[in-house]
Structures are given as C-alpha cells and as structure tokens.
Image 1: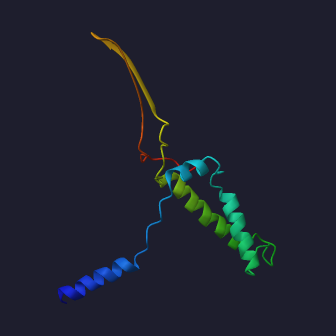
Image 2: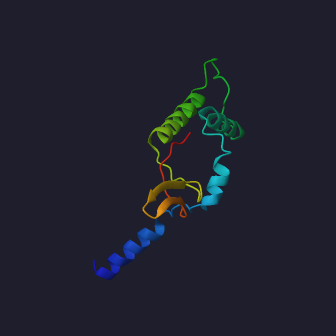
Image 3: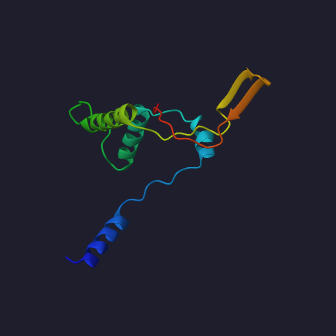
Length: 130
C-alpha cells in the first residue's frame, strides 16, 4: 500500500466518524439547566412502552396472564443505562461569568487595601447528572 492510499483511507475514516455534538452557548446551558426535572427511569420506560404499543408490540399481560417480559426488559435496560449515567458520567458544566466574586482586604504601609474581582471567562467543571 502506498502512502497516497493510506492517506485516503485515513481521510475516509475521519469523514465517516461521527461528528461531535455541537457545544451550546454557555448562557443557554445556564438558562435552561435550572428548569430540567432530572432523569426518571419510570418516565423513560413509560415512554418507550407507549411507543411500543403504537408499533403494535403487545404491552399488556401475556396470553397466560403473566407480566409482560418485554416491559420488564425495557425497564431493566433503562435502569442500567440511567444508573451508569448517574454513577459514571462526567458532565461539562458552565460557571457563568460574574458568579464567582473575590473580595480581599488588608493593609500595608500605604494604608488599607481592598481588592474585588470576578471571573470573566467560562470554565469547565465536573458535575453529577441528577
């Protein structure tokens, strides 16, 4: 294989790779995050089961009267995914400009010194998915 073919393969692989999610503007994350209700295993499961019903998948009791194993399977999968997100995920978060205020006081031979500061850049932090 020549170098030109190798470069083509790498280019094609990079083009085929999924594009990363676009980053939201910091103020949009901050403005919307405080109104989010949090992740609910039961809500997710209910919505999937409702969708299954519209697809014609039986969501009621089995013909012999036992619980529907598909519904139990859906809940099990959702539970594992949500637990993994809550336990293992790292979240990029926003510290809004102006939210960290620094105040310092002191004195020197020239008289009292007062310093006031605030962050001017957004920063990355780690959070917990709730």
